[in-house]
Every structure is written in structure tokens, then in C-alpha cells.
Image (cartoon, rainbow, N blue to C red; front, top):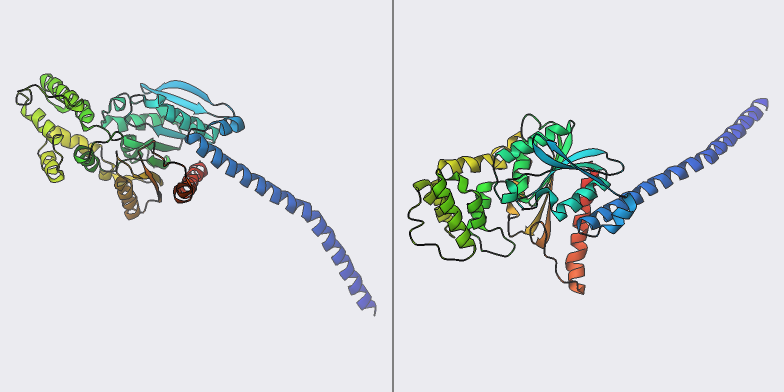
Length: 376
């Protein structure tokens, strides 16, 4: 009987202690749940506000995260804008496309500010020749130089034609282990295929003009007289004006061959002319194609492309994703179902478009923004 009473008393004491521990644990569990809920809500709001700012609605993120500092420095002779918010977590280098405003593009400034408010320290170099639609192998060297000046592991982001030099820099053996990830929006993978699309495809208000490209690459001609004539021909054709008689016939052989590459709308003819083009053009195209170096890449890829892009076809990002898969590189590819390049054309708001376009595309876009925040 004594033993039974002792066991019973022990049991009562254990139950009492267990109940006391449970009561003490409840506030801790409740606190943990509240913290998790707070973090989830905060993350959700950050995703929504950043997405809104990228699309041009900046007030929400500006009010929540506050102002961003923007300072211009010089890294290896290259002007670089550095954006910092209140709590920078990790750096990212962003490469602009072939636009005349470069790092000062209003869209790029807004995106850079938004990323800084989301916790990135953002570096945006100004690549002078790319602002003239003049894409050169040296641009990848410039990207590498700026990346190395950051002094620590960083991500790389790029837009449009800026993705060629950005990806090639990310594949460089000197820095590829320091590149944490690459985010590419509307970029190219093989410059020959992209050039074929530009030269032989239909002219649209959104598409880049092949004649602007020809003028920008007139430096491939050997002598200055031919370069000037190439630029004159390109400017006249871009404006829809007749070219003076005899000017094409008087071009040097290398300049005439370069002009012929841009003067066809037939794809098979384009390929034949490109294969017969000057060696200087062949070498430049090889050096500008990430497809030639993809096996060197180590960084994960986050690829976004408009499915109906009139400037750089979505097939370029699809091919890059396939090459990444073949080489065991972690990657995601999101095709946004819209027409346009870096500034897509949106359908009119109506019942059909709300459910058929805006809801599914908003979901895709928010997933992308969440991923961009997650890889900080």
C-alpha cells in the first residue's frame, strides 16, 4: 500500500510539473507563431510593393522602406551608380541594354531603387558603347572589372542585349565562383541567331532597327572611308530614303560584304552571307555569344522572357535554359505571356482579360519577384 501511495504521489507531481511546463510553453509557442506570421506578412508585402514599383507604382515601397541613396563612383574607368537602402544585405551588379540612356534609364533607376529597398546593394555601370547599340567583346571585360571592384560574392542581373556581356563575364574563370546567381530578363544566348531574327524579321515599332545596328558596327570595315559610307547608307535606309547611286558599288570588299549581311530578308540567304562575311565580324560574333562558353557557367540562372518578344525571341532564353539543364546548372525559366520587350504591351482591362491574362500573369510575376528577393 505504501508503494502504491508513493507511485500515486509521484504521478501527481509529474502531472503537475507537466501541466506547469505546458502552461509556460504556451506563450513561447504563441510568440513563435506570431513571429512567423509577422515575417510571412512582411515578406508578402515586400513582394507586392516591389512588384508594384517595378511596374511603375512606387508609392507603397517608398513609404514603407524609405529613401535610397544613389552615388556615382568610377570603377576601372567606368562610371558606376551605387544604390543603398536602409539595410543592404548583399550586392548585385546590373547590366543595362543597348539604350541611349544607359544607367540613367528611368525604368532602370526605378528597378535599382526597388532592389535597394528590398535589401540589395545595387551596382549599375554605364557602358558607353552599348548606349550607341554598339555591342563589343570588351563590354564583358568591363562587367568583370566592375564585379571585381565590389570585393565580395555578388549576383548579376541583366536586361536585353546586356545579358550577353553579363553572362560571358559570369562564365569567366576569374570570377565565376564569386557569382552567386544571374537574373536575365529578355536576353540572348546566341548572337548569330538573334542577328538573323533582327535582320530577316519584320520591322515593327518595338523591334530594334537592323540599320542602327549596321551603323553602330561600321567599325568592322577596314578603312575610314568605307566606315563613313556604311554609316551613310544605314542612316538613309533607316529613314526610308534612297541611297545615292554608286555609293554601294564604291565600297571596299569587306564593307560591301558587311552591308550584304544586313540587306536580305531571307533566312537561308542571310546565313550564306554571314558565313562569307569578314573574319572580323565572325570573331566579334563568337566573342559575344554566351552559347560558346556556357559549359563554364557555375551560377544558378533565373531567366525571364516575354513569350512574344519582337526584339529578342523567347527561344533564346529557352535555349539557354536547355543548355543549363544539359550542363547541370540550377535554373528557372518563366515565360510571361505578353507582347513586348522590356516594356510589354498590356491588354485593355476587361472581364475576359482580368481572368484570362491579369490574374495568371500577376501570379507568375509575383513568383519571380519573390524568387529575386529569396536569393539575396
